[in-house]
Image (cartoon, rainbow, N blue to C red; front, side, top):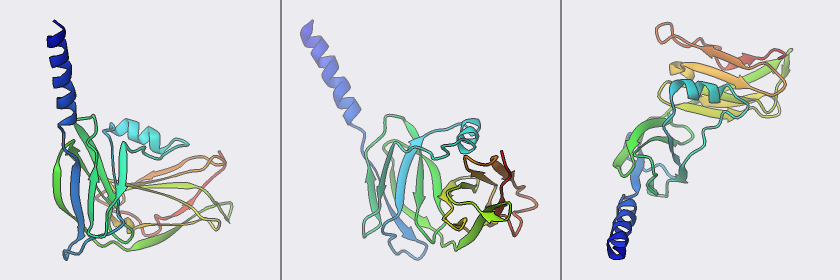
Length: 196
């Protein structure tokens, strides 16, 4: 009886440890490695839960695991417990990427497209708002940043932006959604907050 129990426990332990790491290489569209890119995985999140998180005082998505690419653009993450997770990759000057993956998926080469960073600002009553959290959603991924002392921030080119939310404890949440048909207005990154 004890032998059978130990055999079952050993099998469960080995099965749990048998998942391979999530690995890949991040490169540019012309095949050059992207060193220092942030790579993270997080649990799947329903659209309504994501919206609630984005509009909360803590809009950061908490990763299950995170790393940076090495000088050759390679990364490796320990396999998560969840069978399916969301993978996010961000490198300054490139369009962030997010996609759903399996826990032990070999991703191979992942290409990032260049994307110019655009400047934005957050004001209230004509004055800059420092420390505001800005969440720019591009549909398949989100970009989170904070305003500096002058109320300025940078985000990847907002042409494909689906929504922009600004959260600051002293002001009402600013949240605007854009239609894919009409596109994102030119001044989308210039945000004005009101008392809340």
